[in-house]
Image (cartoon, rainbow over the protein chains, first blue to last red):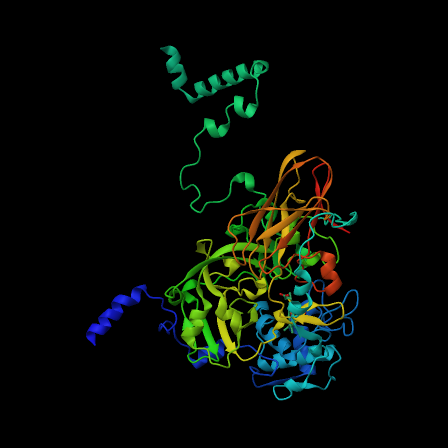
Length: 202
Length: 420
């Protein structure tokens, strides 16, 4: 047995190591996972307990979000609008918002929680995030002014554009078309310039 | 004797004699035929240069001060969720210098203390794990050179020509040799359960950037990288650790990586629904368009790199890449696509990496319409912008890999144009 061990010790340094666990790292503790595991999924997995009303959400929004997104979530300057634009996706200039474009409400909750709070100097409780999320729904005319969003009713709220997304289909729609022999000579009879850049004022 | 002393004694004496010599040359200029660069002594010849280690971390020559990343402020809401572009017109070869790699951040540049750096793996794994940077350095590691292209590169050109320079039309790309640990090793360490088909990669920065990655890709060729071009990652590229997702859109290469969660379905987070998805003309949206289609562009001449030498021998140069493989071939046209010529391919043909091409020709001094067309190892041929528009419309914002046209004028100036 000892002999075998010493053979292993001699062999190991030159052997690829990754197939078996190497015993590196340490086990993550439940509180550590809880501190970092903040993500939320469309099926509601990851949502904490809590709830918030449209009315409370309006207060939270006006105080913490409106400077950039406008009182009615209509956007300020180059900061994005969170409301409006429903039915514009085939327009020449579509307006992509939570109401017009987002597939899932969980995306809104998750994003506000991860990116729109601490980084901008705001700490919001879970209830406050439910509330502003409810307010964003309200500003898109998707719920009434007495609506209360909670973990319990969360997945019953569906956004208008949920069915508007489909999996990348370039393999069927584009790749066959763009895998071809390339024309090398006299590929067209003439060439016209159709557009020239204007000075962008860089 | 006295003459010798005069030359050596005082600095004043030396300067005076210098002026006398200079005066003699000036007055006798007609007699000395040749360029002053040669016939007159230049300061770098006359004087000793800076001592060694004058710049302990070297910087480019003072004469290259214009070669900089540049932002376009109006593209994004503010400077913490913004972009700066790689100056492709000023670079050659295939490796992007670290300080010139374009930046895109959604919550500013995080400054992560490596001592406090932790990477967590949780979710559908047998052992949720925490790694320090030192732990990561004990896994076998690899060096691989890959391009990283932002999905929005050339996105401003969907509706037509807009940006007047290859830095701005194509500069959301860089090509770097990464040192890192195959992500597979870390996942094997944690033990992915059979239901674990997806991975959420999450950043530790203020934006908490998060993207869903299919497990197949995670196990195939992703790297947990800590070095770029030999040195530690730059802060703006995710120091101390970023994810490398070869060939796939840059947003998935999560910087300041702090957590990997294994799950049984994708998360549909903001950067894979509201953003980095492709709105088609019919109002429906293609999502998870991860692989970057084959693309190329002529980097010189280009609007920021006009032709200053007049007619005669000219080196046309450019870059090509594909998220699906390598680039065996690029074609170049001088007449807007009537006749094409195979470019001279340079350097090794690497997978999912930039390839440099050249076309050396005699310019007759007439106006030209320059284009390049990439072929990748899967047989895909880079399409025209109009071919893409006919399939996708003009509102998709992302993934524009159409053929770029530059108009080279008789005066050597270059403009961004589109042609029939």
